[in-house]
Length: 387
Image (cartoon, rainbow, N blue to C red):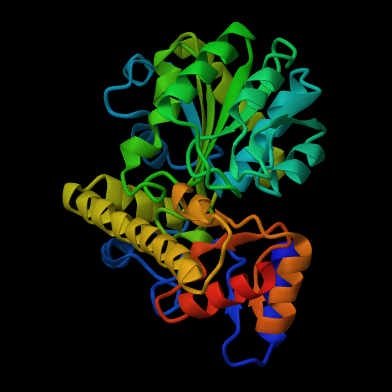
């Protein structure tokens, strides 16, 4: 895995000012891992309850799943109120993606469409599930903008009944999302093409700092009548990277159909990993079932998002201060954890060799690794290799 390899190279580097902006995990402004205070409080609550460590069910903790669905679809979601949304707990987003890929293959799908570019792991996950991965245009690498017209053209050619994967918010790796007007156009087209929209939602609350805003595209599709599938990760927004907390859900025509799909998901899960772990889901459940802890989470998640946004502004400003003549507007137009810098592979390698700054070969920078203490150093290095 290129990101794991990058981390290993970084660890072996003895240079004092080395910087790792490759890994997608939040860091505070001192560059340290951050545990949300509401998570610490939930840990104390659970510790005092002296809970057992029995197996969970195949579908996981039902209280967690219910809260996860309300978090994503909204308390006022019509299909949620009607019992038409069924879901299971998964091994974070990665596990949910694989489970749904297996289900697609089991029921006759031969391929899945993903944006170009997309999160690197999407491709092997779906290939290992037995699906051919096809791509639709998403990003203009020359202008660092959304390639919306080409996206529409490509989606218009996707065969009826195909599954199309969509990033719900904070597209990884580009950080460039459609506007709500563009999402509406996509919803209408995907409905016309009779495609199955599959949302990957890894950054709800973390992208904009507001969870409902980050779920707006998903909720629009549901309101428009799509029978969507959704995978959720609680790694980034709750900072529970090592707990593998996620959910996979579908919107059915009626409660019976939703229940039948959940039954099929359980048939995939049972021989794959039997049942999910319990501690992380208990933490999320403890927080989202308590009004005060929920508000604390909202505030603390917004704080993470605001720090990332502040570092975007600082990085762009420092690049301009360094005398760069390149247009770096895209850094502040993008959203979420990553900045798709536009640097070429040779520039990335030069930055690594000369300045000991580690990012992925495609020029993706994890803004979580940028701090007030290193932003000028990073900006100067970027300017040096791009001038």
